[in-house]
Each structure stands twice: as structure tokens, then as C-alpha cells.
Image (cartoon, rainbow, N blue to C red; front, side):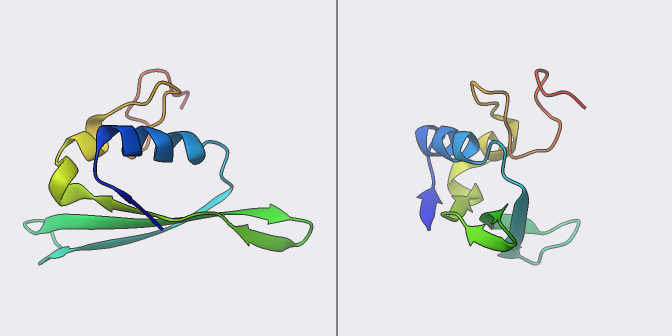
Length: 91
């Protein structure tokens, strides 16, 4: 599992997730709710290969370090952690 705590690491992760068929997401934080604080996002991608799932390398996004960049940054390929937030992404 790769820790994503910088913009270059975020770029690498977003590039690696292009075309992923399945993505499990887990959120960790302090009092997660409307007023809570999100601290970490764990992402586990997989793809289907001839009737079996192939697990791809996972990512631990350190939202505490990246702050709003974790969700507002758009990669060169138009990807973002926030679904549909980049202008180049077709909806």
C-alpha cells in the first residue's frame, strides 16, 4: 500500500487508477459526520481477469497532510479524487 501525502504521489495514484473497474473505499477520521474531520482514505482497486479479480496496489491518501488538495487537484489526465470535479472529465 502506497501512502499518498504529496502532489506527486497523488498524480501517480490518479494515473494508476485510470480504467480501474472496481474500487473499494474506506474513510477514517475524527467523529466522521457532517461536523467531523476526514483524516485518511484507503483505496483498493481491482480489475476482472477471466472470471477472477486481480487486486492492484492500494493507496492510503493522507487527507490531513494534503488538505483540500486531496479533492481539488486535477491530474494531467483529468482525474480527481472528487468524482466529476475536473472540467475535462465527461459526465
